[in-house]
Structures are given as C-alpha cells and as structure tokens.
Length: 526
Image (tube, rainbow, N blue to C red; front, side):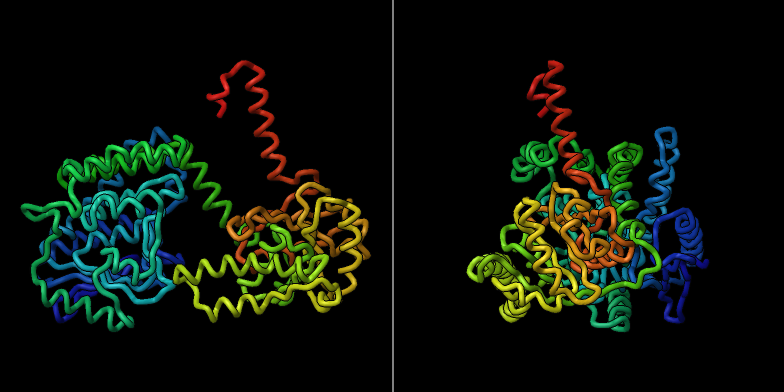
C-alpha cells in the first residue's frame, strides 16, 4: 500500500502513514479512497493483534483536504454516485472510529479540510507545537462544506456555538489556539515527542470510544432543543442572511447540516451532511468560487502572468510620492514586509501625518497582542517621512500616489526618476489615467508601469499591474515580484481608462441603471 504505509510494530501498535505518491501534499482522491478501503480491510483482519492505531503523514503537511480537481468535475447527473462515494469513504473512517481500539492522530503539519476531518475521527489528537501549522475547515471559502464528517464531529466535540466560526467562516488556528478551542488534545515539542505521546495515550486507554457513541452523550453547550441554544439558533439564520445577502449557499447549508445533524444520531447526521455537501458540489456558486479562489488564484501566485526568463527581483528601498490615504497605505504595506520606505510629500509635516497612519495601524496590532512595541518601532524606523526629493536617492522603485492630475504626475515623475538606481522602476498608482499617457513624461518609458492599489491598502489584497505601450517585459516581471514581495495579489491588465476593476464596477452600475429604466423595481435591483 504505497499511499498508506501499514506498519504493525512488535508493541502491537499500528502506524498508518499517509504518503500519496507523486504529490507534494496528501489529498482525498480516488487513490486515497482505494488505499483507505484496503487499509481498513487489513485492520479488520488484524484487529485481534492490534492494541492501538496512530495516523500520521510522511509529507511536510499532515493532509491538505479534498481533491478540488475531482470535485470541480462533478455534475448534477453524477450526484447520486458522488453521494455513494462520499458515504462509502466516511463508512471506512467510521469502521476505524468504532473498532474499540484507541486511534490517535499524530499531526506533524497543517491539517485543513478533509485533513482535519481525519483527525476528528480519531479518539485523541497530538500536534507539533509550531506556529506555521494551521488547523481548520476552510471549505466554506470555496463555496463548499466539510463533507468528511466535520459538520457532525466538531459540534459534538466543542459545541455548536464554538464550532460555527470554524464551519461557517473557515477560521484557521495554530496548534496553541487549537488546543485552547478543544480541537486537539496535546502539543508536542518534536516528532519523537509527538509519537511518544500518541503511544502513551494508547497505553493508558486500551479501549476507546467517541463521546457521541457513548450512552447518555450530551452536546457541549446544549443540543438544538436546549432552551439557551434554541434561543440562539432562532436568530442565527437571520444573522447569516444579513452577512451573505442570500448570495452564498454554503454557510446556510453548513448551519442546516450542523443543526439538523445534531438532532439525530451521528450516523444519520453524517447522511444529512453528505446530501448538503453534494448539493453544494454540483452547484454553480461552488464551481465559480473554486475556479476563482483556488485554480485561478494559484495560477496567479505561481506567476502564470509573469514574463518568463527574467531573474526574480528582491526590492530593498521604495519611494512613495504622496502621503495621503493611498500613499500612506502603500508605505505601511511595504514597510511591514521589511523594505525601507521613503514617504515624500510637499512638506515633511504632511509626510509625518502619512507616517502616523502606520503608527495607528501598528498600535492596534500591539493592543491585540499580535506585535510587540519593539517590532512596532522597527517597522516605523523603516519609514522615512520627508519633503525633499533628495531622500529618494538609491530607491529601486518609486510609486507615485498623488492627485489624479496628469500635469502634477508628470512633474513628480521627472523629479523622482533622477534619484532612482540605474535599473530602477517608476510606477503610478493612478486609477483612471492611461499609463501610456503618463509615461510620456518619463525619460525611460520602458521602465514605467502602473501599480494600482485599492483602498484601504492595508486590507485590500489586489494590485492591478498596468502595462503601458512601451513598458518592457523586464519591468513587468520585476513589478510582479514587488507586489508578491509585499504579500499582495498581482493581476496584469491592459492599459485603458479604468483598467479592469473600475471598468467592471462601472459596467455593474450601468447595468443596474438599465434595469431601472426597463421598469424593474429598485429594491429588486438592490
């Protein structure tokens, strides 16, 4: 079994190591399902010689979740077969869960989606105490629900109310937060420590059963019929509708699956979950969200629109012209990623006001325990507020974020361009003026490009990279690198008034006006 290594030791503890061949991460695809069926069959035949089972991974991550390529292909005519497949896989997991033998998940890396659901099907969970490890059920962010038992096991473990942020918002946490939330049971300092703790649980618990399989089980925090919980659930759909506006079916189906499943036994709750899961998988909303937020976004992050053959650039010093809301936001987003920033305005006083924006945002992080005072000071030290263009000397990129006035932009372009390093780039944050037009003021139009950020810059991930008529591939590739270096998402667009997003928004508004003209009621349009 190359997908799941079966190692029954002399101590009668079986270690199942998931290691999908030819993949960097483990996923729930056809190969995994076949291996799971084979493994469960072997466990049943060896059950008398097994004291306990440890489930772990040979990959850097524990398990990445469902195979989205496979899910993306499921159509309405496949729904019945899809439900049978999901129920079949869950039945195999259930055989292990109800075998009476203690099963421990030794979580050596991130466990998301189906990966965490495998862990929830175990009786005990030990995870490496590393902050980079993430645990969660993010399916809702792709228009889906946790279809491997997540909507049934997690509420039974930590309660409906505590489970909702993980189920309906896709909340992800590090190991310490997962322990506090009750999702895992122990932290381990190393792989050896993790395996030792897994064995210790098996030694201490020769017979194990999930709480929900025991007689007299009660939901933590109360079942749906409990007066306190019933009161909360009465308003939950309205609160959810207020957030989704009825446009996202996944959170609604998750709420239904969790609450309806909580009113029956686990196995029937699992069937309810599968039906809602199948409904979402075949729906167009999930297809659209998966296509955009997974396949297309991964393609962007992999550099699909970046010109090939250009060596990757690492920027060190960036100039920002204009310390207004946009300029201040660009300065903050750049400095927090370790780059030196020169924030220039017409006066040092104005520039200092722009720098104060960063101080405000950083102070919030400190107050929430996400940053220390020393780290805050370190970021602020990287921002130089100035009224002099001389301080731009040595910048390898300058971004202008001044008023939407072509003459003003031309003036600051010519003033700052002379201060750039030999191969430095100049970018405009314009949202409307064509880059080809603005590049006429440049002495090096091939090094001139558009970098259109969105407001507020510290929260908005998207950056439009606009290619002018004379912008070189080298400039485009390096601008792409800068956007990724500061943790934003670059999309490359053609040069036209409004570029891409503004044109889309304009079209959206115009369509609404056209509908009004055609006699459709305003509230329906809204």
